[in-house]
Image 1 (tube, protein in one colour):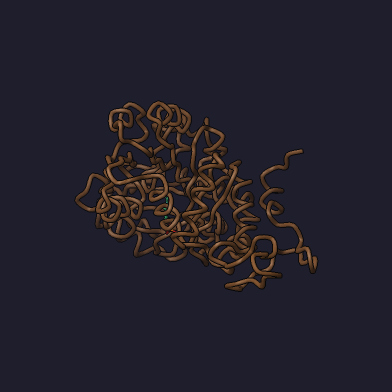
Image 2: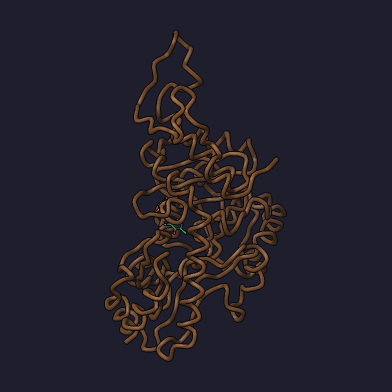
Length: 379
Ligand SMILES: *Cc1c(COP(=O)(O)O)cnc(C)c1O
């Protein structure tokens, strides 16, 4: 029998400890393991960069939640991305990236990977024809975020999976904004799912981490080889904290969505808001695609302040309950100005974001309290 999402989140990879019966997988805070004889490590554990039972528990759980064959946990989302790039690509290869990619992803491609001979093109990934036009015969990866950060554009995962196959390229989906509860890209044809587990998967703003989940066990083996060879692994305590978070992912996401829907309805009719970006709105250009591939529309909301950039900055500075901070996906609500904060490194590039934009990571507090805070912040 196959279990439902919440059951997998609580049990996948998390059998009670064989020796003690500890219900929660212990934190195996060790760098090495005693061996019974030369060349006879116990259950394959030799050295903790290569393998750690706490990390294994998280990896198995994430693979189950994404419907993939293998999960790999890293020190951060960007460490996962870097390991993936250097596993799949060679100098001279080409990658298509979203023209509104997460700022750190853009920086990894533009400022780091490019120096190693990787070429890239930024394309509007909500437009399959634009992605087709950007792809070349050297394209190895089509990189997708959906919804995107911070404009919440939607890419059609199934259509892009078809396009990737035509080019013999891999479709990589950064599923950080949706989480596996709202969207499972592998079932739609993606080859690799990327997560910053720092965000919704961990969910409590207390740990940095990243993950890859793959459909193909062969690619899984190659990535596991590079995970060990490059060494950017998730530590045992970080893996334990992330697992503690992931057990409540389903109920947290539902409350994030409930609160975001209330806030979107409020902002949508507010005279000091010029435009609301949320894929749940029927007028959002990606609404139909989002409705097809997502369970609900998520906890991220962006909006344009009617008074322009200065007004957007004022709103961020005036918010009290919404904490002014980068990052997203935690139980507490956050507010930020992408142009001057998370996306400052994209200034002057094709990925520059509108200056009047405010981004909200809507938390799971009492919705009325969040609305009252926005009311005073909008002025
Ligand atoms: C935060 C984030 C990343 C990078 O993850 P880190 O854990 O900060 O390294 C990648 N993609 C998206 C969409 C993100 O929000």
